[in-house]
Image (tube, rainbow over all chains, first blue to last red; front, side, top):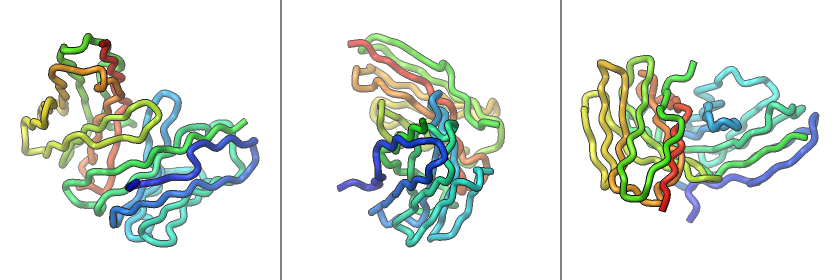
Length: 115
Length: 112
């Protein structure tokens, strides 16, 4: 069984379009995250939700809007896509933010290419 | 700025050799973790070491932590071709587990 799943795996789109990436975890975790990994493999946190509430928002442009309909799902909607948004986006989950042992489980990633 | 910095950025060794990767960080921490990322995949947690621990082992992995130098090392003994991956250190930046800040990673290539 897949613990953290993301769809789609690949996304190719034109500049200016709006797109969404979906994430689901079946681990019963309270906390979910979105990360962006650039071409140099640098992994940067974008958002974190704990039990459907936003707890981390790392100065990400307003064009990025996360939505957590329930604690098992965290979707990422991106408006007016720009070339610089091209990257691999990873969803992750952990048992609960604030625990001293906060191991994160990652999804397989969504490779977004903006043309 | 980025919390964790790994070195070397890339490492190429022969199967059977040991691989050592280092990580330095800037602020106080409650714990430090190491993750592995195979090409085209998500990260996988390897090991966590708490700030009051100095060394930890898990199978062929050995992690050390020196909080006075704000540094950690990951040693993989008797490396295998399957160990080829990128390895990242991650800290909580002293946030008590609310945030995980990743370094830029070390790319390890193990030649068969």
